[in-house]
Length: 355
Image (cartoon, rainbow, N blue to C red; front, side, top):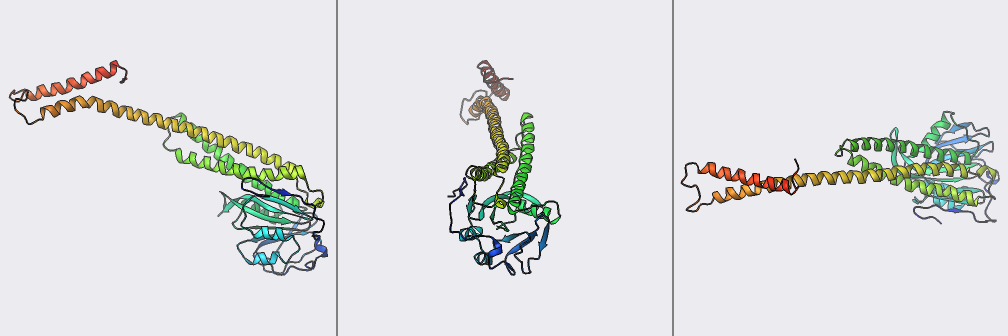
């Protein structure tokens, strides 16, 4: 159901899937020390949070729900996921190197892959990585192979008490909102760069904007490609819905789709603007090259007759004109200047020379 450049949302009627209510599972007392855990939060019913030590046993408590975030590079994560009560396909997708954006639903579980901007040291990168996730009513499992910007920012907000999320769906919506925020900031930066390039083009300064423009266009194309896949996820979720899922797993698909639509529209405008500026820059470059070639052609044409004259008088033959004349050099120089003057006059007459 998934492919590059588009999303998939499945809503099968699977009546025989095991219930994912953690209160009835054998893991209800404790998950133990979880391998590959980057952070863990116990979220209370009122949305307040409690950070959990990643090197201590994690309890599957009933007075709230858990957010467990993994570094998927740790190969032990896959074995641990198969030991908890989530669908096997969800556990497999969590650790798969599958970067196709997708969203699936089975009884009591939503799982998939979405894009997020990478997290560089102290800043947001402009490359995309992917967040793998699976959520039930009492558990949100997320994982990544590279640090991600939106997930890190949401963690910081929850840790500082700046955000309260009352359910796993609300947390996923907050993550997607921060993905959109990061893309929006990057789009503003691209728009400012294009403004600067446009000003330089108006002034005829094109030498220092080619690389910036190429980078801006490449980034806008990447942003549009990822946003198109992400927005299609929520449009399909909005159309098909998932009535068999618990209310706690109901994502605000329409709100997210509308925001991503508006953001993608802005990115498309930036992409088209970058393409037009690149075409204008190429046209100015071609015009500048044409002027340079025209100038070289004129100079070459002007100096061809003098070259012919000097070549003629440089021949080592007898009876050469002015060879015995004491003013022969002056006469030869006169012929050189005259030939150049005749060429200039002829080129001005036919319009090939304008000055």
